[in-house]
Amino acid sequence: MKVRLTQTPVAGVDEAEGADILMVKPAMPYLDVLSQIKHRSLLPLAAYQVSGEYAMIKFAAAAGAIDEDRVVLESPGAIKRAGADLILTYFAMDVARSGF
Image (cartoon, rainbow, N blue to C red; front, top):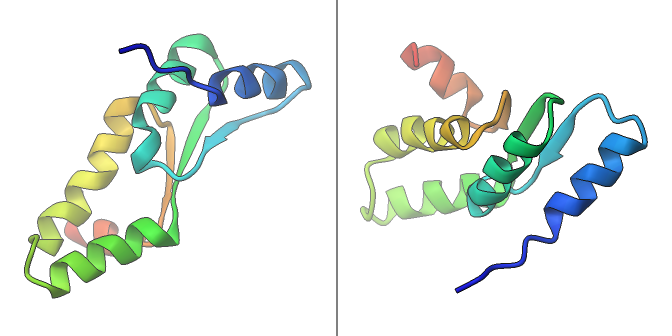
């Protein structure tokens, strides 16, 4: 199955127009896009873990479906592995306190 990534051409346009940094949001659903952009650009790449992703993790943890501490640490790791140089997340303080 071939997937057409519409975000990667936009990143190229942003770069050509003089962007200093590229950002992908929401981060988790677009890990593949992060990876593609990272391989196509030399600019720093930011990823924003939006409030909906934060809420999804909080609600799943409250329902007992996931271990919140593990997911809070794993999600930025996945974003980093996909190629993000900078991660903006509502879990920043939790991650910083854990020594991640």
